[in-house]
Length: 239
Image (cartoon, rainbow, N blue to C red; front, side, top):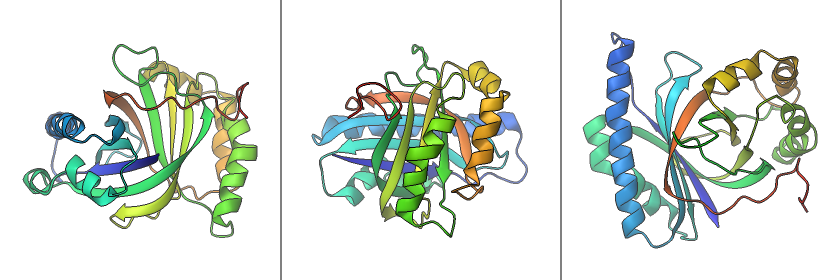
């Protein structure tokens, strides 16, 4: 099983109000959701398909609009990315795309997705880059053996997944991983960030990673329910 992550960005005009930007993003996210539904119906090899829409970027001028996660047995990954965001749609909406194949490290089992009806209604997602003095294996060993135990203690963290980038499919993405954590809602996330556990977590990042990652709060639309993740590293039952 392969998991593809597609990051979709749209450049923001210099002079644009927050309302104008929100309206423009709604159009893009709606078009991506429609395309994802078409793809899921036409592509038999899709085992899971989730569209995450940016709700709140940490950096005000961040151009990311959405993230698409696709689970598949199909080996033609470039074709699948092209189906997720077709050339015509990219031209029409001035979209840029980066896509990577990943393998998942489950820290806490994903039992729900951040939909309006879910008990987990918000997702934190972000990019991660290893420090230059760490090899790739050292980076992920530190994350699994040390940082996961620190960050997993932040109050309110429900699901927690690290998607390790294994292959660049499109673009020049140099990230080592995409991290995702789920919370009950935005208020729960904000409250968690004010805790000593969160402060300790952010302080530990510099011990193994660069501090240049980008982060977003997202909501999710599940087009095809992904395979069950199984128990995570911090949970009973993990083998």
